[in-house]
Image (cartoon, rainbow, N blue to C red):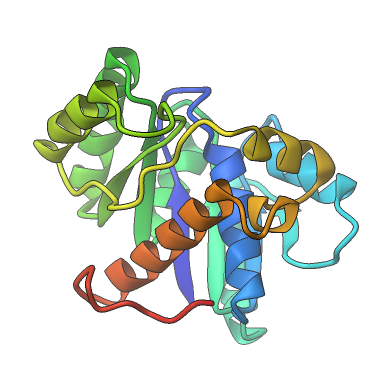
Length: 216
């Protein structure tokens, strides 16, 4: 079982939306997928309660329950576990970092978000965990702001090759209990999520970006 954790000490970066859409895209690709919601706000859990489909399932648990939950899910044959965390430094977030094969740090192309990644990177570095920045909620199309943010983040670590733009599909999908690949399977938001999923799977398998893992 592979585990991805969405972690950052900055709220509003789109962690929960990314978490559920990545999980849905993985499930559509044939992976047995599960979501753990460690955020007290329960965004992923609330999303699942609005959802008509049964999978991927979501469990809202406490930090001390993570190891046992992961052991149980691995025995059940789950291929990919996605963990959503709070936008603050909590024991639950540290627990998710320790458990993950890859930690994704969403950041908008703004100085506030970039500066806020430092504490998270510091924690991940101390734990010796693999991580990557994900540029999220970027202006659609080519943007100097996005390019500048990519260059700055690249100085502090790996940046995912897939950049996600601000698109209504993310807002609408979250409200409807869907992933963006369900909201509009042929939309640009769906394509960006699939690309990010593929990149993350490659990263966890130690493959170069050009060696694509087939997920769809």
